[in-house]
Amino acid sequence: MARAAGVSIAVVSYALNGRPGVSAATRERVLRVADEFGWRPSAAARSMRTGPRAIGLVFDRGAAGPVAQATGVLEFVISLQEVLATRNLALVLQLVDGPEAAVALYGEWWAERRFDVMVVTDVLLEDPRIDALRRLRAPAVVVGAGQGDVDLAAVTLDDAEAFGRVGRYLLELGHRHVALVSGPKELVRTRERLGALAGVLDAANGMLVHEATGGTAEEAAVATRRLLTGGRAPTAIVYDSDQMAVAALDVARRTGLAVPWDLSVVAGSDSALCRLATPSITTLPSAQRDLGTATGEAVLAVLDGDLRARRALQIGGLAVRGSTGPRSR
Image (tube, rainbow, N blue to C red; front, side):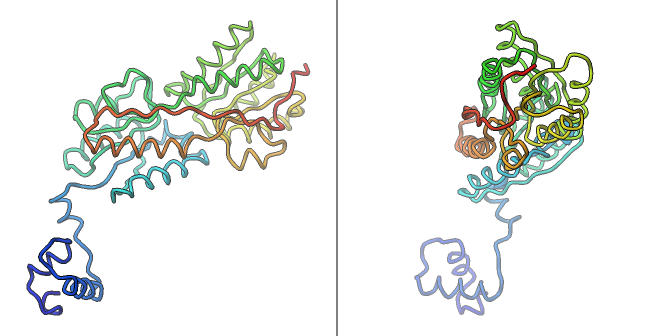
């Protein structure tokens, strides 16, 4: 490029890296030649000088089942990447089988310094991934952390407050026998949602039945059929995700129940699926976009030196639709 532009190698370096000492005309000539040559800066060389400039995100296929299959996961990833792009940071996502595989991957990544910050989602009640990141002293942002994880940067979503509101809404409709069909019981968010609903119903002498699943629509359908055909059936069921709730509508129809007259259905996350279903499904709004943005902001705060950055989010108001109604039996 130096030969083609008629300048020295040092001038090419200065021009390409935006350093002073090169006239505007010369810089423009060098950049034009670089474009003609199809030249791009070496990522490996830049990483030696400036670091990896990338963020690592690992999904466990087991614990992340509900997240990977929920329609809002793309919103989370896109909004996270939009924030990271303001610093020219790349987001690298990898799927693994189990938390132990994630721990091993974190060890490899950090030993090679391949990523600036790790992002951890789908937090478990006893999470070996968080323990591993602490031991490695690797910068990390934990999404959905409990209040005890104060030694790491974290983004929290107040599931307890939101699901408490769902419980009070169902009580107002006269429902006293309610079920929760959730993702894996090992997840922090499952504990918070279950505790909130149980607390509200217990205070009103109601009853809550819990069915933990892998978070897929298929497993939700099986759990719903078990609830509706196994003796005293609940009059309202709350589901973790949009896909789980949509699957439940089909099960209710096949068992001869009419929604919402015989059974009320609530989803913990909104999407077009809920709005287009028949009947449309009462839901809490999806927080995935806001969660991705807050996670990105926490990552940037960690890069700026705040290793214990915190972001706390609330879930918006319940969207009441056709799948819920007063208790009729």
